[in-house]
Image: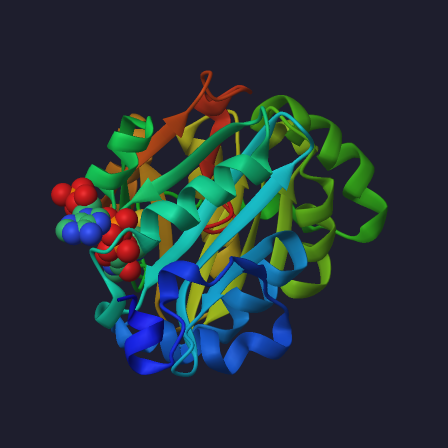
Length: 289
Ligand SMILES: CC(C)(COP(=O)(O)OP(=O)(O)OC[C@H]1O[C@@H](n2cnc3c(N)ncnc32)[C@H](O)[C@@H]1OP(=O)(O)O)[C@@H](O)C(=O)NCCC(=O)NCCS
C-alpha cells in the first residue's frame, strides 16, 4: 500500500518541482531556518533578481526543498542554496532537485560551492572539485598593510556599465551584465580603479556585514585596493569569499585583521570554467557565482 493510500497525504517524492517567486520567501526562510541558516533577505533579493528559484512544496505545509539556478547565457550557470528540510533528508530529494536544475541548465558548464553535506551527492552526479573557497570575515584593521590605489577609486554609475561588462565578459567568461546592472542600485558601494581593466568591485549588506563581491582585478594588489575602498567609512565587519588560487589576497586579508571561516569546495559539472579566472577574485555571492 502506498503512503498516500495509508495517510491520504501525497508523498513528497510524488510532488513535482515548481518555480518559486518572491511570494514564497516566507516559506523559503522557514525552510532555511530548519538547517540553521539565517534569513538573509537581501541575498534573496539578489537571487530573485539574477536567478531562478525552484522548490518542492511539502504536502504537510511549507517547502520540503529548494535550489537556485543562475544562468549566464547558454554557456555558464551557477547552482546554489540547495536546502532540504531535515525531516525529508536522505531520501533522494536533494538529488532530484539537483538533477532538475542541471536539466534546466542545458549544455551550460555548471558550478557550485559545496558544503560537506552536499559534496558526496554532487560527486555522484558528476561534479568534480577544482578548488576550495574560504570565507574571510571581520573588521579590517585601521592600519591595513596597503592603501595603495585607494585614491584613484571612483564610484561606478549606470554610464560605466557597458565598459565594465565588456571587461567582465573576458574575466567571468560569460555575460554578467544583468548582475552588474543590479549592483548599481543593490550594492552599498560599487567602485572601479581608473578603468575597468584596472579593477572593479561591489559591496552589499547582509545582516550587518558588508559582503565584498563581485570583485575583479588584474592582481591581488589592485584587488586589495578595491576592497579597502569598499570598506572605507564602514565600521562593521566585512566578508569575502576567496578561492585557494588567490593565496596572495588571502594573506593580505589575514594580515588586515580578517579571520578564515568555513571552507567549501568549488565544483564544476561539464567542461572547464570559462574566462580568465585568475582575475576573478570574489563572486557576487557564492550561490550565484
Ligand atoms: C545537502 C542536502 C541538500 C542533501 O539533500 P538530501 O535530500 O538529503 O539529498 P539526497 O537524499 O538526494 O542524498 C543525500 C544522501 O542520502 C542518500 N540517500 C538518498 N536516498 C536515500 C534513501 N532512500 N535511503 C537512504 N539513503 C538515501 C544519498 O545516497 C546521499 O548519500 P551521501 O550523502 O552519502 O552521498 C541536505 O543535506 C541539506 O539541506 N543540508 C544542509 C544545507 C546544505 O549544506 N546544503 C548544501 C549546500 S552545497
